[in-house]
Amino acid sequence: MHVETAVALALLPDFALILLGAGLRRVLHLGDHFWSGLEKLVYYVLFPALLFSGLVKTHIDWSAAAPMIGVSAGAMGTGMLLGLAARLMPISSLSFASQYQCAFRFNSYIGLAVAGALHGVPGIAAMGVVVGLMVPPANMVAVWMLARHGEVGVWRELARNPLILATLAGVAANLACFEPPAVLLHFLTRLADAAIALGLLAVGAGLRLVGSGALCVPGAPLRGQVTAATHAAAGYLLAVKLVAMPAMSLLLIHWFGLAGIHADVALAFSALPTASSAYILAQRMGGDGARVAWLISASTLLGMLSLPLWLAVR
Image (tube, rainbow, N blue to C red):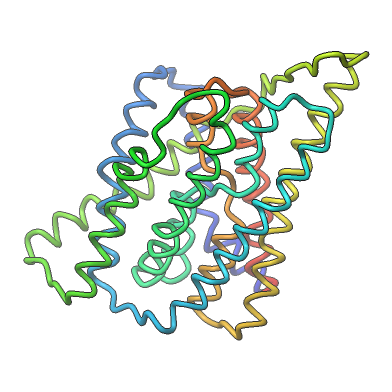
């Protein structure tokens, strides 16, 4: 069996759950309230349990993990820098500030699912470390770019982010060689088992490929030109997220000589589609939420194809 086929088959159940979530939302008509509640359950309870239990149950060699963290940071930094070039296109500053985050923010749900599918609990623990360390700078840069259009307490947001808190608690427990009681560990495992499936269903339910929106640039002579520029900016940011970031990660992986689980996790992290929370941030800060929602959906669907290809190339 070819490597590409093996990787695709390993990830197929996770991507099938995303498509199932999209179908269920449209067929069952459960309403926005149901899916919003499911997303909150996953975000505040199930995924923190998954992160903590994975970190507690796995011995982490921090000296070996350091290059993986460096590669992930380098790839995300590349996305941040290249994403700035979208400002050169004739789109409004508000639209740019909203879409810019789509060049580097990542979907933790898919990342943890992919790492678990490839390497089990050790993979989840490794991805948990990367996610926990990369979430703060990603959120800070995204909020800073939108800060002129709204007010959000970035430090308060980071301090109460459940994924960061769970990662910090898990790392602290790991360093302290803490072993939870069997009952507690079993309880956390039960929650973690539900996290992946429900999280991916929620990702699928949030897919939106209509209503992309296009904010006009003051003084632009033709609306068609604005629309073309807006689409061009979106296409460029998608290329940065799904092509440039993993390409840089691949270069750094070879440079550092990474292999095995650390190489897979670093590359998978860099190739993840944009986080659904980017839409929430854009909406809360008065940005171009419709366009961000379209970008998130497009990157998720394209990522189903590009992510297995990048992993196979390595």
